[in-house]
Length: 458
Image (cartoon, rainbow, N blue to C red):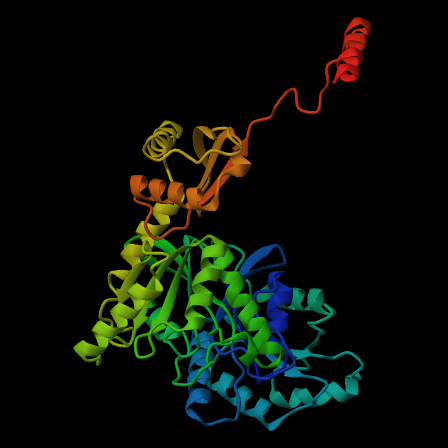
């Protein structure tokens, strides 16, 4: 097993910034606002030519409310998983009483600790000497945002790295599944239910999840990466820079995922914001299914009303599968991953060119495209042009004049023939090149004279 390092400290000391610096990515959400990170995030980093696993945690704060306790549980789990702890402090703000509390906790756990003095730009050595009170030496001064001192820190961590161990497991693997939806619909609860552990912070408050967290796991021997995203509110209700970036990352997760699960609140039904998210997922091209959460506890009349509303709202996309679940109690969740696997396989679109062309010919014979300027539009053959989503290229003449209604007709024909439920279809109409386009015949002198006589006569 590769060496595991956990980044621990009070809020806003720069743990996520250092995580991004060491992993060479910008996965962790960073802003000048305490408490952004609430869940554990994993990433791979290369230190002294050895691959290690990093765990980014939420800040250990003095808040004793229920949310603060849940975040503290995530940090304690990360410490128990780690082989070594990077204890970050804010050199610019100075030593705080909370730093002493964290140091005492780390000593009780018996964990190996390296003290990291972040934000040390412009701070004298005398000003940083007070951190020796914590009992972990003088520490290593760095600036995570500017990259200063990172090389020396890596050298200091070399004795704690087991270079002989196997390489760290891939953090991004398998089918990528994004869990998206409005705030407080139960996305993190669903993630925890699928993982079988309290992996994400769950609290009865909108906006508990602030960042998009990627979680690898296996289901019946198949690898997956679940992406738990922040709740996406209407654009007019998004407040602050941090929430804007969290929404951007949530929307971007649909572009990087092969399948998205849109979670709805059964008590509220499908509202306009859910339709906006649905249309965004269709534009992103990922496979899609809908999970109507909090289904338990509803009366039969309420359930019937919700189903009628869904049928009315989804009339433009009846091919989207809908599951009625209770993420809290687990009812209906077991069938969810089976549908995800099926949608992913449909998105791979493993179909031969001959089968696609035969389907096109049958569709054209049953309903030919309309005439354009008195000339027939001819669609000759088709082939696979991409996957996730399935993309079909159709070749013919005057394809630029095929109306949108006929393109939808072809989409439905392909969907029915190949049972492409749960995935959007892209159709590319290719126009054949005319070798004589833009060319003019050169007339002989005799032809030029005849042309002039005809024009004069007319």
